[in-house]
Length: 231
Image (cartoon, rainbow, N blue to C red; front, side, top):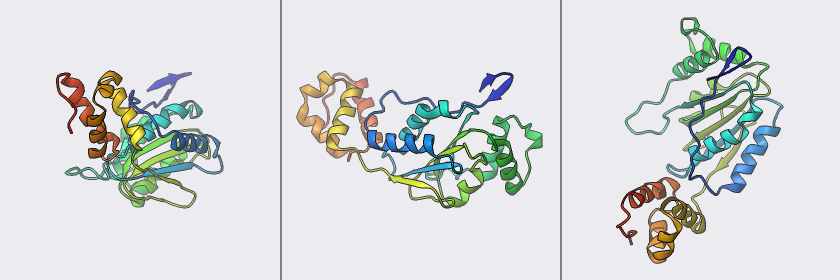
């Protein structure tokens, strides 16, 4: 939470990943659309399989464009595709957003419809960025869309989620072999990667180009310098 001229401004974005790389075309497309779209609350949806890097791209892009949304950045993990965790209910997400925007918790409306209307009122005329991570479906995210024409929404989901018309959608593919190799090199060190090119190629293949799988393997290798990369 930041304070600007006596007003508390939410700044809830998770930390950006130092290992983020690649996705130049997708990042440029997302950022350009979020900055230039001002006809309605601008919504950009990223979909793709688990581990493909949707959340990492959304958070990285949000940090890149945060300065264009001076009235705050809101973030929520909606748990839409997490095993053994119930998806977050819209009422709870709205409660968090309204409190972050300065509404007393005791003043948060009990019904989803009233809370959503209050959220739209509190964001009307403002420029707020909302990141809806790991969404389940349109019913979950529809009440969480802000009301300001200058607001922006980035959402991530396993499958296409379109709460209403005008959503720009991008489906993420796995990393290319070159991108996956570069990511592994950044995570475990270029010297180690160059020393075992065959093993590195095997790791990339076994991980299927999924950034999450590559990060998990790289973390284990980085913590054990004596280990060779699996073949």
